[in-house]
Image (cartoon, one colour):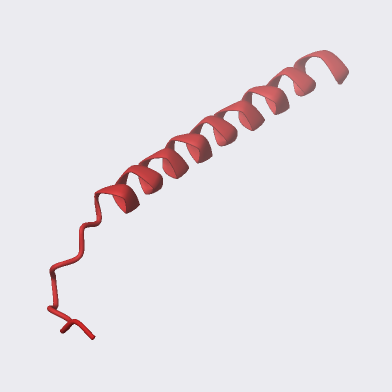
Length: 44
């Protein structure tokens, strides 16, 4: 078995995945807010 060295892991893929998740979450939240505003304007 190879020896484990703390701090030697490449986390670039993890950072890209996290950035994509955060961007998708922001887009989803903004979309829901816009949808709620439009519903308040046109359905009430």
